[in-house]
Image (tube, rainbow, N blue to C red):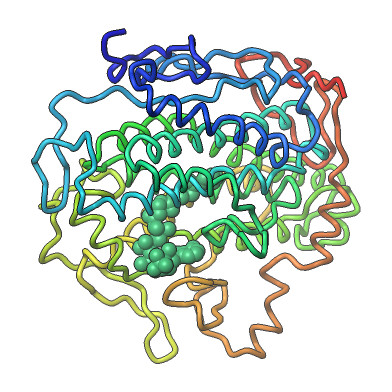
Length: 485
Ligand code: BYC
């Protein structure tokens, strides 16, 4: 392979599968090979608990061609082929936005943007192992082998996304990059002394409904941030993120279809039992399914935690990253403006005299808000699909995204309490209604009581409907995980 940088196929000869011609890059290859044992140790310590010797029916990337990049086979997770994969280079690509708009993209990092890029790549890298840590106990309570396999697929691919960021750190940031790469294996989700960098990645993912909500809502933040970084003028980052996005789609499918299957099963059980009021929580729970109001509460929690990942509504960091050509907007190429935003404004929801009002601010400083708005729009489509399932079953209940001011820990609304409708509430009122909108201990206890593993091929726990089609078109009875413990 004369130049691995445009290759569609992956070189599997060495220890680290890659399409970046690592064979010709001794320095980076050595750095990655030195990092590799620490990664495997981390995976064994902090990856899925149990199941490390199980054979899991996983897809592994064998190329980066959008039409056919994955191969399915049984793999033991510690032997998964993690590697470095970049989407093909686009010939003649130019920087699509900011003050360098129209200039050829960079293959090396301009000195003045080094610190900014290092921070963004490190933050992105930090979320990947964090999510694996958050989900490490879930294999033990999987509602089916199908779901267990999906969990492990998500986990190994988040591991690969860590590799993707570590490659960039080690190739372009020298000693500092190697130190950041080591720190990515040192921090731990939820650890008091050495937590992960962003709030939502230190929260627990205690049950499978949380997992589905996380993959729907939080992986979707991943999609939005990767889309914004895929616009980058720093071409290796853009190409890395473009390939990560192809993997990310499956993660959001797992969340979208997972929540949908939970809603479907609940509606089915209510119908069979002749329940007409979905808010009769005790009656619904007695059927061994998760009532719709509790699903709504879980949604409120994961949506609001994920909104915090967009940072402050008004951000100089975001303005600088855009002006420098480092981080763009969602679908930048489809936007019809000057892509520099020097004189533009954007409406931001702000707190004024105890109420939420829209206020026009310079568009450059409102880029986090804009990406968050695009995210909220993207989230709404799944909610519509879930509501269709409820409607089809004949129930009047509807799920809805809470207002963006609800339950916030970062940004404009962090200092106030707001209801799901966005009305600002006093402390007493908030204390009185909080349990109606966020899961409490009793909800957690009930959901935990349902988390009983089901590991017979083709069988599903009673609280979730089977999927419509199998992975890789496998039949219902397919043994997605050969457990062998
Ligand atoms: N928690 O100017 P601001 C994914 C800090 S998910 C803690 O608003 P900026 C995935 C901020 O760091 C996508 N701290 O910040 C999903 C800053 O601190 P310093 C991950 C926070 O830079 C599922 C200060 O507040 N990728 O891939 O405009 C499974 C001022 O804030 C938080 C990225 O996020 C927070 N939530 O925006 C697996 C992309 N928010 O530096 C994977 C890379 C803000 O002043 N990151 N702060 O001490 C970024 O683009 C930006 O850094 C952020 C923050 C959007 C995160």
